[in-house]
View 1: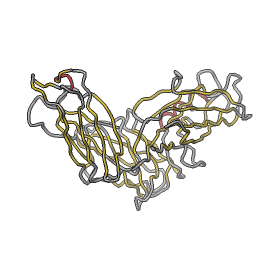
View 2: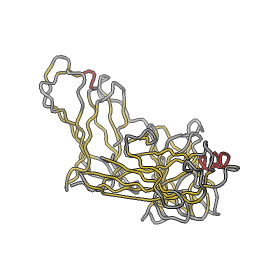
View 3: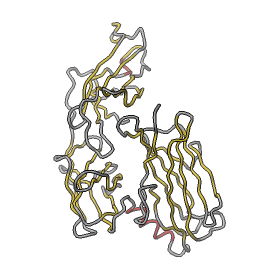
View 4: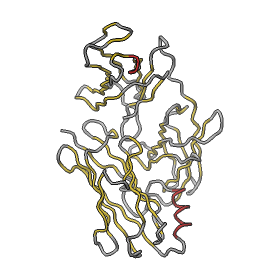
Length: 338
């Protein structure tokens, strides 16, 4: 049976790795808000980001009284990408009480609750709330070090910011994740880190790192550093009517997993392409040392029936890691994320 754990980070330097709550301090006015961010990982084999079956989020006020209880159906809970979730709250309760608020998140899979995590934030007087919230949201990220360290992610060709890049920072001996987050529209991330050198692994559609990992240095404490990404071309398919579907299989610390078998199947029968029956259909490849793989597939719209979905699985010698059904777009290339 799958075991789904909740992997969460916190922006407060005084807490362990739990929930990302931004800002960490907010006002108590009607317009003062916070965002709770978290992601869920399936650890059946290697930790990979995976959607939860069910989520419940409980929020408690300064007196430990339950304020609200939200599920995935709530309009306040967002699912911006696979395995990632956000909850948008007014910072204070209806009475605008000041003090420490706590958020408790639980994840359910296979009929049982499998993971839980907590985080907290502080509500203060509204006189500084909105302005502080704007600043804090701009620099929110993760880590538990003593200094606020800024990392920028740029396109090496155009010198422009790369937004939405997912960055993992590992400690110097690459034995543990020190911090992780996504770059903002200015290509910026701010981590709470100590004055050390870190190994950075970066993922973003259409880009690659020239050197993996990239070493970033935040010494002295509070220093800035920059990662330059290069445009990534997955190459051309043998014929123009195919789509190159590609992706990466990586461990939780960002390292590529070699030898994972990636298979794309279509079980539907009869299945036609250009009037010719091609069912049953299956293509297989294996990840390289960086965890990279690709398959050249027929776009779903070119098949008959044209609503056909591919069944894509990741398989390791000890068992299947992940499975996903999806249509393949009529594009030259497509980055598949889990």
